[in-house]
Image (cartoon, rainbow, N blue to C red; front, side, top):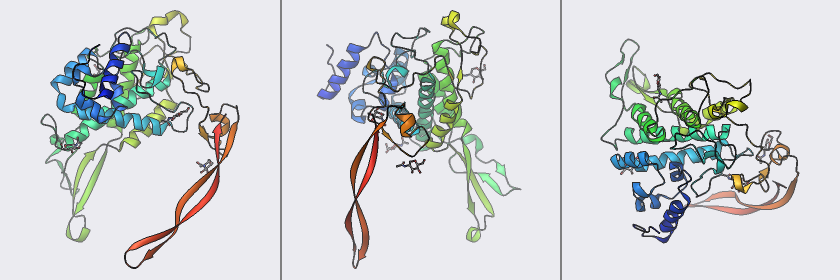
Length: 369
Ligand SMILES: *[C@@H]1O[C@H](CO)[C@@H](O)[C@H](O)[C@H]1NC(C)=O
Ligand SMILES: *[C@@H]1O[C@H](CO)[C@@H](O)[C@H](O)[C@H]1NC(C)=O
Ligand SMILES: *[C@@H]1O[C@H](CO)[C@@H](O)[C@H](O)[C@H]1NC(C)=O
Ligand SMILES: *[C@@H]1O[C@H](CO)[C@@H](O)[C@H](O)[C@H]1NC(C)=O
């Protein structure tokens, strides 16, 4: 077993795991979103679960490695936040199939086969690809704006422009998303050609690529202009404005909306099973697409990496997806009494501290059966 460069036992274990599990599976860069920062420093580009093309890009742009990880983490956290109240809650594991079966195949391959572990290519997969690609653009761009890079910086094209008549000009640092977008395409689409659907429909690769692009476009689409006033005592005689990316939560919410309205398309490799209502024509750039209907995510299915909703906390009075009825799939729920201890009745005591009492309260907590 290859153990070169393993300084720490944990790192060795991870390397060994990845080496022994992959191939034949396709490891994924998304793994960087669930692993600790220390691991990254121990493993070089070669030992990371990247495709050959990604490793090559990683070596050439090794200064971007921290941003790649930042982006992956940002995306994983945002996915979990957007789906915290849903049956599928975007939970991750430390294996190569970071999100379970939703992301196990299609990456780094040109094939359009649907894996044997079940129907990948659901709308959850679509969201994952979009949010991960967007996370990468966001993190790389932030790093550019921070002045941490020699290859990119603020958007210089705007400097000096503006409208004197309207009393504003471009100034400060406008986020330059082009570099991050370029990198995200290069890194995730894996050098695949700019594929679009042919009349026969999509392949798994072209579908994933389309959804990644939806994520990148979400960064562009949620950018805004911020301005600051100057002038005597806030008179705002002159304004300096700059373009800025939205906070990533905004991008996540935008993509969640796209997820709700995602569109089923036909899988070119399964022509025979294509149904009439499936779209064959290319869909527009803002639309997330998927091949397969999602499972209901109710029951645990280890083989497919579905956790099920048993034990999930639910809200008895909510009629939304976090309500016990929907979240527990009608199985019912258990009620536990939990004790909350809080600081309360805090008083400022001269001088200088705050004294509080400990207050206890008993609350009902419901979890799915
Ligand atoms: C998702 O739900 C499972 C239980 O089904 C739970 O173990 C896990 O911690 C949850 N993950 C997140 C990110 O909330
Ligand atoms: C920029 O570099 C500094 C110092 O190396 C680091 O602390 C900071 O987190 C970096 N910022 C970004 C956005 O990468
Ligand atoms: C693919 O090509 C089209 C037009 O040729 C272009 O508008 C689009 O931005 C390209 N997409 C990618 C991911 O490069
Ligand atoms: C439960 O749902 C109700 C109705 O949607 C909401 O008002 C309440 O804040 C929720 N409770 C918790 C603990 O989230």
